[in-house]
Amino acid sequence: MPKLCKAGQQLREQIDDAFPDRSRTSPEGWLGDQRHAARKSDHNPTAEGIVRAIDINANLQTNPAEAFDLADQLRLLARTDKRISYIIFNSKIASWKKNYKWRKYTGINPHKTHIHISFTAKGDRDGSMFEVPILTGEPLNGTSKASKRKLGREAF
Ligand SMILES: [Zn+2]
Image (cartoon, rainbow, N blue to C red):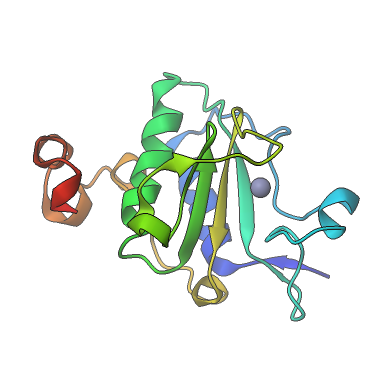
C-alpha cells in the first residue's frame, strides 16, 4: 500500500490547520492515477512505496491571494529546507535550478487551481515542522515578512 512521505503528511496537516475551511476536493491529492503511472511523476510511488508529491487545492476559502502567498513562501523555504524539491503553481515552477526563482512552467497542466509540491528523499521520514510564516504565524528565519519584502530577492 503506497504511503505519502512524512514531509507531505506534515505539510498537508499544517495547511489544513491554517485553512480549516479550505476545499479538499479535486484538484487535491497525492497518489497518482493511471495517467500519472504512464509517465514520470512524483505522484507515483517509489520502489519503497513512498509518494513524494502533494496537490493542494488553491481554493483555501479565504482571500485568493493567500494561495499565492503560500506557494511563494514554500518557494523561499525550499532554499533552506531540503525536503522540498520543487513547486508548481499558476504556470510557474521553482526548483533548485535558478535557486528557486519562479520560472515559466510549460507543462500541459498550467496548475492554475492547485499547488503541486514535490519532496526529496530527505522528506521520506522527516516530518518536522515547515517554517512557513503563513502556516506558523512566525516570521521566516526570524525576520518579518515586511522586511523580507523590502530587502528583495537578493537578500535570500
Ligand atoms: Zn501534482
